[in-house]
Image (tube, rainbow over all chains, first blue to last red; front, side, top):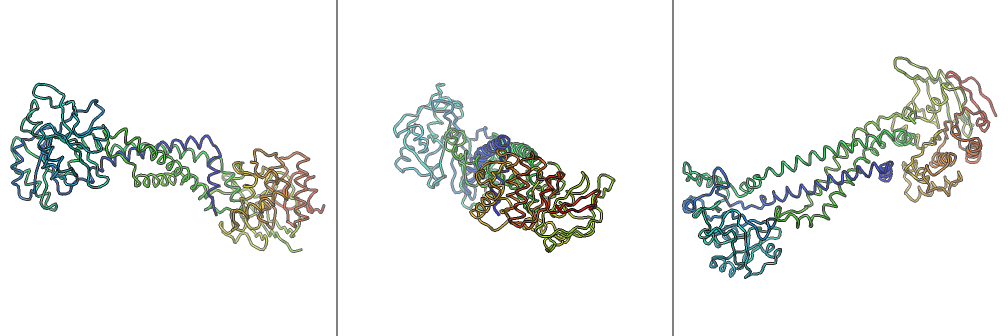
Length: 385
Length: 228
């Protein structure tokens, strides 16, 4: 027996009330799609982090520098295949909202440490040999309309030049991209030697080291051995896998997952109360109608299923519409926040999880009215008319 | 003719707080197939309670009720629901139509419990609406119909699954005299032409005149029987 049309008709017994409830569910799931996608974007970087790479950072704070002399020591540690370094330049292009990460690096070593990124060999040579040379992710170059040979001005907010000038001018000598689809680099890379000579302070210092290990299974041992080298020195280190490093980096602005989870829990709790109230009101109004259905031969279980189905239908339709609208808006949102959350994408797992939550929410909301409907005695219920 | 309803030594008690009220007391009754019976009596005499027991909406405290060959006290909730769907058509004083559904969809409701497909359900509902003279109101919702028209839709809903018995609780109680007469004529027609057994509770002696037999209840007991 197809109860769906009956459920749908029952929902719209009080059209305005149902539409308003539906609207609140749509907004909740729109928010769910948005926040889950943001959390996924932060987690996504962690998931693709190399398993054979370690990050050596200052023990106490990521904003403390490390001496570049550590590099030679790190290279002597057993199990280290190669090592290089990077720093956080900060700064912005033209406007503060045009933010993207900018790393001073050693060109050849960087691309050896990150083989998942590819660059034209000629452009890599140009990067190595041009002091003011930079390479940009291909997507970033497209976004700002840069071409090779262009001058790229960057306003520094951490490192002024020796003469105090905050405007650095770089020459774009190449672009690079991920070897696999879905692997999109975001780092604007500049030549460390030029950066180190030209900056006003901090010469001989780096932000962190990137270490490739010979055997990923022994990464923890290698990490301990590196930290042991600098124990009790003035520049102690803390070495972790790249995934852990990215997690810590993300956690600097708070535990994204926890924050999103907290917000969503509050939203869903409110929606369950709101929808529960709507369903309870609708149920009370319909007690005689449900009794009539039982009179006509609908079993207790069928009437309970009808009531439960209405709650699930309301929540699932609201959830599907909310997620559907989010899917339509996803590209626009991704463009709008790409500087802050570069990997923003509404993935099917989020949609599936949303629909599952909607169904569970429907069951929660409909359980009490459905149970009461099941127990409803026809004679008593008809008397309420 | 064979009895379609046999009520034997039936009592029905209700508990109100600490008090137990006996609504029906040791009642015996037999109704033949094809009969049109009016149940009359003062308020609280047990008319509606008896009707609910015969319609399988409630269970007796004591005694036995056999309708269309089944002893109702032996049926569980699910079986009783299925039995009601097959054998009983209900008509209420206040129509009890679902306000969100059109007349057609209201009439189709009992057919949702059958194996008929959508097209067959629609066809049968249209036939039932034609019998009660409302084929041109099929798409109207109850709120768009008069009281008499709503009661006709309710009768079409009661008829559509071709039940053995039509059980009517004050079917004209909410209608004016002329409309009430139309509804009573319709019930009489269904009894006469379509062979439906009709049991009707009413306060109205004029309504009872349409029945073949009138039974009077008082204080939970059958006190008189008359042929009209």
